[in-house]
Amino acid sequence: MQILVRKLLQRISFKQATGYRTYCTKKLFDIGQPTASSHPQLLTEGEITPGITTEEYISRRKKLLDLLPEKSVAIIAAAPVKMMTDVVPYTFRQDADYLYITGCQQPGSVAVLGHECGLCMFMPEADPYDVTWQGQIAGVDAALKTFKADKAYPMRKLPEILPEILRRSSKLFHNEQTAMPTYMNLEPFQKAANNGKVERLSSFTHELRWKKSPAELKLMRESASVACQALLQTMFHSKTYPFEGILSAKVEYECRMRGAQRMAFNPVVGGGPNASVIHYSRNDQKINDGELVLMDVGCELHGYVSDLTRTWPPCGSFSSAQEELYDLILQTNKECLKLCKPGATIQQIHNYSVEMLRKGLKEIGILKNEGSSSYHQLNPTSIGHYLGMDVHDCSKISYYRSLEPGVVITIEPGIYIPYFFDGPERYQGIGIRIEDEVLITETGYEVLTGSMPKEVKHIESLLNNFGHGIGMESHNKIRAASS
Image (cartoon, rainbow, N blue to C red):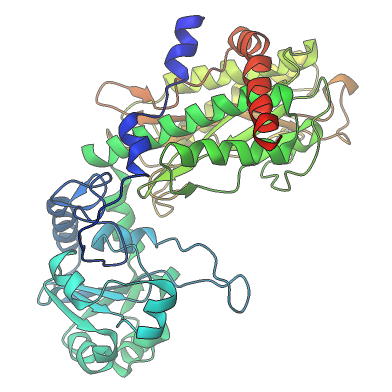
């Protein structure tokens, strides 16, 4: 057990820690996002974004052009800035398709990709007032030198240059999620739309993003590792601080301390009956002694996300009813993992999980028969989804599609029994989910979140042997610092 804990509690490396405290006195060219010269702790020479090289971005563009029909053009706008109040923006997150093709992590630009024009980027111009308040941004020079666009122009030139490109095109594809009036109101675009010659680009970009490259998989492994370490620390913390809000804050803190830029989604921290709410997000309740807590978390590391779920009793021991249900979900998780291999489909794995859960719930006495319609009330979710740059990645790819090496999915069986469910009282108010990230390999699968404990005996041992010590140590440090 000591060896297991040492492996799981990986310390932040010296390189990671000093990376956030390294300062440079020489003048650097700032383009509004990290580069190899401005952030050598994050990028190496030849990378546009951490872990992804210029060559890989150029290869993505070529592959997209190969998929596009002859004489067609793809228009991809950056994600817009969304406002929380009239003067306070939400933290910006780039659209996955735009980031995948360009490497630009900033708002305000439009990329056009075509067989004739190559990659043409229309970039915002830095306003002195905005630079004073918000800092530098990537402009035309950055588009050419950093993002390696074939052509680049200031955004104000778009109404002059883009119409001619569109007129010479037989078909247009664009990202509907980030579509903007700047190009949609142009006469050639309107004409093409009226003639049924404008379609979604996502059918092509999702195809490209579905299978991950070795560089992408390295980032996804790192993202999964960060999330596992953060969730383990949070599990220890839960025994001393059994509050949903504190655990939510703890897991985000631990993820960010390990290099994550943000959480992949608002953590689900459901204590007791709140765990039966599948995407519970209030995170404002105390977890009572004897209750379970379900935590569904994930972080984003350099554009790639993780997603895992564990359920445990902060008090340190499962009740007999909790363990009975937990064992059913755990066995379903394990059996579904065995089905993950090239040629299988998410839908096939889902169907198997439904059969296994129906049978198990009938044996326990929660369902009256395996065909009961009540099952969908207890678990209306799919067994999993694709994972990558987005949490529910590549939504245009069917769950009936045969899995291939390089695809990453989740396996997440669960049971969600509300208090009002007409069943045995001892199971009411219990929610359990066990979710792992799975990479499909040439010979089967690799569990990217396998370092995070999920066996009952491991969870109880960790909580009872290490939970109090770690929690109190942190608590004493806080008290000493404030005294």
